[in-house]
Image 1 (cartoon, rainbow, N blue to C red):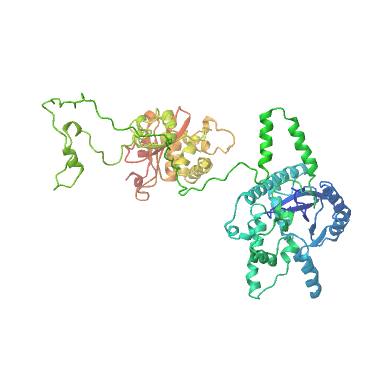
Image 2 (image 1 turned 45 degrees about the vertical axis):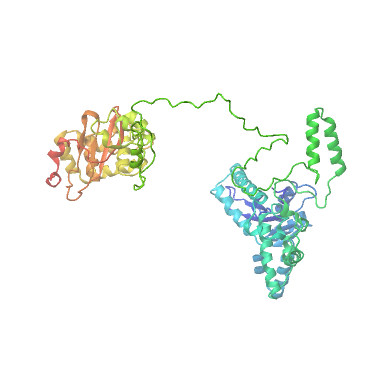
Length: 594
């Protein structure tokens, strides 16, 4: 990209990019489509002239001999400005417009020097805003200041590849697309798809100045031509008056470059004799006559007026398939005369019909409006059985209906049905709307409860902490409750829930189990936990919260598959509730039993 667009060079330094605390010199270029790109980067320990000179000399070595920046834009760093004068003496050096106005103190000096800077060929680049924007873009890729040199090189290469894709797309749009605002200007006809859309936009904006010039409100200062290399308002007005188009040669070659090919030397004419010799040598080296004929035909077609290709014929009705013309007959065609029939010709006699024959009549009485029923009455009995179908066509059964799960209609749910239907009781299958197979890492029971609560299964540590808080807050109540069922159960339930290792899979002693964890989960979230594990189906209700506080509790269905994996089951409708756990009747408070 640097060899293709070497006209503009913007330089600035940035900091906090590497672990060595070195300053990064950022070289930025701009394309004909007004896209910025990173030319190169260099690290310097001190911002001195000899360091900047070394970086600029290395940058100059990447260009061909005839290439050199036409304009260099920097800040007010005197060491950097002196290095630019030493390495690129022929280039125009400009200060950032904002910095120039801030640095100059005298009003007359400001007006004179800033205006002279804008009159030079700068391709519209008068500030270092592009450089600052590229600094921010690069630091987004670096993601911090603790980067080594190889890490920075890798990130900058990734950034440059992204810029090349974006610039290539802008080139393609300029070569192939036509903007609606450019199409209506006839004087732009020779520039469309040959000049960047950004340059065409600048010309259209300059065209608006013509109306003010005609009204005497403004005058052409030739700024567009002197600073950007594009025709100014007076030149555009001349083309409009003479009804001509702007010649392509009136546009600076910078705006005509729509690819990544290196720029050619200015005013360099191709060697036509060498090209003709190369064509002649190529023709002489071809032995196949068909290939030689094809090559020669392509050369002839490139000559104006010698191409055999014709423009397509304009059709009166361009839409649809063209109609075939009537086949023309030969001039000698004579239609065959109607010959008389043979004297022995006799029409076929009417054969006797069966006694059940009834002549078909499609007539409807004149005093009756034709309806499907009246038409069916006019048909013979043998055809009356073909009735007109009304209403919507019959739809096929849901995808899971043939497997016993009529509510699971998605094809993606069929694998879960086939895998887990053996553990779900047959009476519950018509009410199952979904089956969620959570991650089998030893925390599947807590994951299933998270899915039932409407959150992601990855948030299962929050479920575990909530159950632990419930046990710690009401320790005395839970201790008395579990001792009624099993003396050692209370000691096991808190220890199994307080397991804090979330990296490794949980051991069997830390798995979710019922009835211990089932009671705690139902009480913590005020829900109804339904266990559909084969012959052990039972329900767990809240032990201390009655229906007056939660009249319509959430139902969470779970099932154990294979004895070591829990899955979530979504139950809908008026499904039969399994019997409650016996410990609930013995330990629940009176308000919860109502």
